[in-house]
Length: 468
Ligand SMILES: [Zn+2]
Image 1: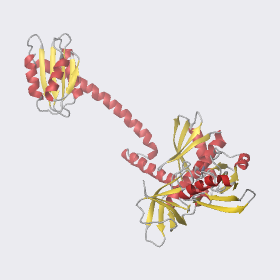
Image 2: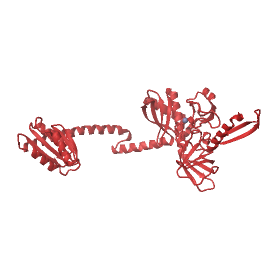
Image 3: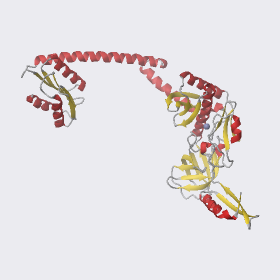
Image 4: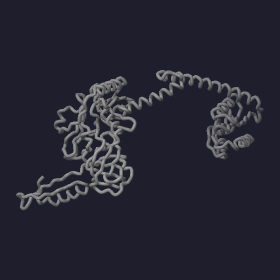
């Protein structure tokens, strides 16, 4: 880069800003044609060298601290790192960073990247007196990393299978702690298509095809027939976190994940070396979403763990029915049918019982003022049961009024009268529940209410009955 003396001020300002952000800038004066000198300016961006770009199985590494941050959360920025920051659908690694010549080992709980390409390692606890330049040793949680590799490589295989079989393209990928999902750009998705994609994916895994990382230019990528090409990086040599595919310091190059003779994708994630390391792929729920169909899947050890959990659940259900696990749906259907039929029988019996009780109550109640007034407080009936009784009473007798209540399980009241009787049960109910601290209401002929405590219900009913 050559510049005239006129722009030196601007360069100096830029250099200071880069230095402030952890970058290194050197200005070197050279003899030139311009009046005095032409300046050769070399600017090194403060990006973190991402070691996982070249080796997904690198679980520990040596590095140097660039920055130690305390606010808003303690964090470290290193010159190089094997920690994967959350991006491109894949979640971050966890692990530790041990400080050289010190007994400090810091737990890394979250990793993210900045727009200018630095990897930020968030720490569990604050850092004690650390200066830039200090040597450190990073250690990745390998079980978690291996799981992420299985899920992410599994996703590439599965997405490619949907394209090969049905020309269905993946528009997004999501990795959660317990399951993963892809969104397919398709208006329909059948059970047979899901099973076919699952079968082809597992065949590709079984064939143990090599999975290679390659770096190509955007122009080369155009002729390779990639399943997915991300949009161009916003700046020259910039933002490696962008779509996770541009390699730092290598301009507008793309990182390609090549599953031999099956899939080529631009991707910045961590991947297995051979498809066999994915283990297996299990497709789960599929549901219609706004932009197509969402398919949940799990790969590798996660798939085995999930199948184990399914089996345990199914076995528990089967033992409740003393049946084989494959007969559980049939047993559940049978039980539901039985419940439905028993419920119907119970309703019929309750109806008959209410009719009989209403007849008995009417028979034992003498008529006064041209009507029969039934006042009863029960101690073990639900609201529906006293409601049914009130209906029977007012239907069986043309001149009846009923003030019924129950004290448990829920203290409740039901007032009713035969059509044509002169009272207003709705307002009487409102009056009494207000007195007892509850709520209720209804029509002129039928009202119900609930109160917080059973105390006082019976005397209140007796008091009311005297006025009717
Ligand atoms: Zn990917």
